Amino acid sequence: MDLKDLERLFQKKGIGVMGTADGEGWVNLAIYSPPIITSEGTLVFGATQRLTYKNLTENPRAMFMYVSPEDWDGVRIRMSLVKDETSGEFLETLKERFLAIGYNTLAREIRHALHFKVEEVRPLKEGPPCKE
Image 1 (cartoon, rainbow, N blue to C red):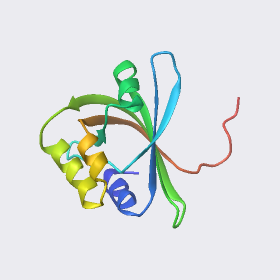
Image 2: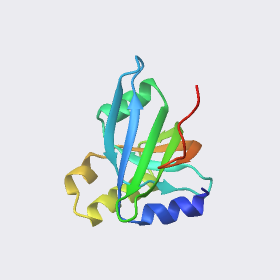
Image 3: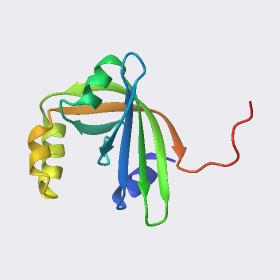
């Protein structure tokens, strides 16, 4: 799946979930909106000062799953945090997105524009299980 395919998928109505783990390996899952895809191919998510952000300060690796229930199309993305912006164009764009859909409180709480390098993209559903 290339970036154009991801953009098309993220335009569908759906739900995103980001998985992170702290330095000891304890996993957290959180609902996340689709990211901004940059011209360099990084994914940019807005983040508050909650557990997901705390985990990423200890362990920069994460997974993002996006599912469109209309047709059960989706993707699983393995990614690594490469940049954390606390001001600038991306942060303002992310806040505006939340304001536009009525998430005013969340828009005020977003403090970070997190840039992730895509390490691997996998389909939501795959074929037979892995052999041991």
